[in-house]
Each structure stands twice: as C-alpha cells, then as structure tokens.
Length: 290
Ligand SMILES: C[S@@+](CC[C@H](N)C(=O)[O-])C[C@H]1O[C@@H](n2cnc3c(N)ncnc32)[C@H](O)[C@@H]1O
Image (cartoon, rainbow, N blue to C red):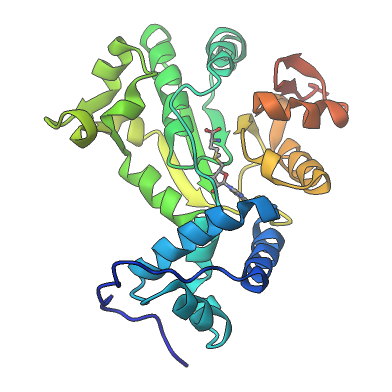
C-alpha cells in the first residue's frame, strides 16, 4: 500500500487540478457520517482549497494525486484525521458573544460560591482554546476577590490540530484585542513581535486550569464527568442536521449537575427552546435542581 511521502517534495508552482463532484461527494459523505458536519455543494470550493493545501503539505504534486491516494490507494486511513481537520471550521475569538461571560461572572458563579467545591466548566467545541481561556480569565478575575474559588476547565474538540493549538496557547497578538488591557497584562505574555508577527502566550497559571482532549460530539457517550456546572457548546451545532443537534444537546444535558447551565451560541438558542429546555438568558439553559 502506498503511504504519504515522508519528505514532501516541493510542489509545482500552480496545481490546476480540481476536486471532482464525485470526490467531493465521497468526502462530504465521510465527513458528515463521522463528524455530523454538513458539507453542502456550496462548500465545494472551500473544501477544494483546503484539500489542495493539505495535498501540498503532505508532499503530493497535485490535488488529483492526493485524491487518487485517498480513494484508489486506500490512503484515507492514514489521512483521515487531516481530512476531518480540513473539513472543520475553527473560527473563534476571545470573549466571543461576550454576554455569556457576563452572565457567567455575574449570575452563574456567584450562585455557586456557597457550595465551596471545585466548579467544573467544559468548552465542548473548544477550537484553538480561545473559549476555554476566556472562561479561565473570567474565573481568575473572580478568584481575585473570592479567596478559595476553585475551578477546572475542560476543552474538547474533534480536531487534533485544534487540540494541539489549545495546548500551545500561543495566539497572534491581534486575537487578544477583545481582551481588556488589564486582563491582557495579567493573563498573556507578549513577545516582542509587532503587527502580524506579534504573538502572545496564555500565562502558565491559566494554562494549568485548562485541560484539553479530543472528543467527537457524535459519539454515543462522552468520557467526561456527569456533574459539570457549566457547558459551553457554541457555534458548532449550526453545522449539524437538526436530529444530530438534538442528540448532542441531550447527551450534554446529561453531563450537567442539577442546577447546571448549558450555553449555546446566540444563533443556536432555538435548538434548546425546541427541546423545551428552561432558558434563563439568551442561549443559556438551566437544568432543574430536582
Ligand atoms: C466555529 S468553531 C467554534 C469554537 C468556539 N466554540 C466558539 O464559539 O468560538 C467550531 C468547532 O467545532 C469543532 N467540531 C466540529 N464538529 C465537531 C464534532 N463532531 N465534535 C467535536 N467538535 C466538533 C470544530 O473542530 C471547531 O473547532
């Protein structure tokens, strides 16, 4: 069986091969089955561009050659995770949909303080970690005035590339723009680079609060505690079919402790309302205490 070249040969300057309808449909079918992500025909060009980049990185002379390798030479087994990685959209930001973090800091956490136990938070489609580290910044700020506030944050994502990136916790300086100057000083270490070259790394104290692991929301069960206080699952359900959305929400709901909160992206809140979950703020659902 052929394997992906280990020492990538330089690619020709221009690869004009295209992703055939047939190969697009094959990949879309595989991706949808494994990840739940729909890839309608409108994503053809997007997938083609990303696969072409992957083909180049893996040392193939063209996208055609890469597709031959995937489908004619059984290369999909080796390339599977890369294909999943290219099919996922990982756009994220620090303090994205900021009202959820205000609600976390102003309402959810104050109500948990009396319990005096470790508060568990889960970013269930964490991309490169920006959401998990935003949660960590919010919790660290609260901990400044609440001695003894203990918390642990789990970030999970299907993309191994994103999990690696979250572990590294290094971001372009520009990504930190939504973080207040005060929090930037406390929680990010900037290198000397400027403009496009500038980078910042999340401080070790926050990195220690966050753990990351690969997890597919399509799996029938999740290897995660079932007494989580707050689950963020934002801007991922939109990529799924309605029945998959409902199944994922039901599974995540089962991981919340009574009184716990599930937070969906603003454009996804109708998934919770459709299931009759009690909504306490935009996109925020609270499990009954019973
Ligand atoms: C657009 S990002 C959203 C990131 C973050 N939650 C936010 O709101 O900024 C969607 C993430 O969902 C992940 N994802 C897609 N399908 C998934 C699945 N089946 N299981 C787990 N993660 C998945 C992608 O890899 C991607 O990193």
